[in-house]
Image (cartoon, rainbow, N blue to C red):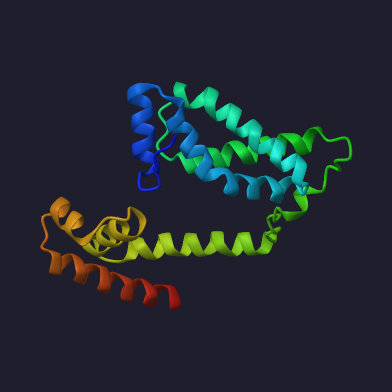
Length: 182
């Protein structure tokens, strides 16, 4: 296109494409993401020619798929397509060793059974202590900490004013701490 479209954002370009079906609008978008996609492909494939080929494959897929779907975040979508394409390429490589891409994935640490039992005992102690505090305090603490409700939501549900809710939470926390420490 002879005209300069740098001032038009991707959302507007997508809207224009949806309105008139002109693939030149998509071309402008893809041109903007060429270097980013090349960088993503280089990160995974570590080969310039393969990365260039991968970017071209991503563009072909984009031209085929974008008209079919309503894509809100074109940059994120293109990144995912490029990433998935590169991972697919890595899987089908003959020189691919199964551990190569996995070495960067952090493995979950094994949690000792003793720590799990200790946490379970703490939860049991907390439940028992909750039963020993005043009902108003228990309701407010459970609503605020477990159900993630605001003071206003708790006040609306219980009929108490916000100062009462806040006081019940503070007093309940103090009473729980005292019961757990004894």
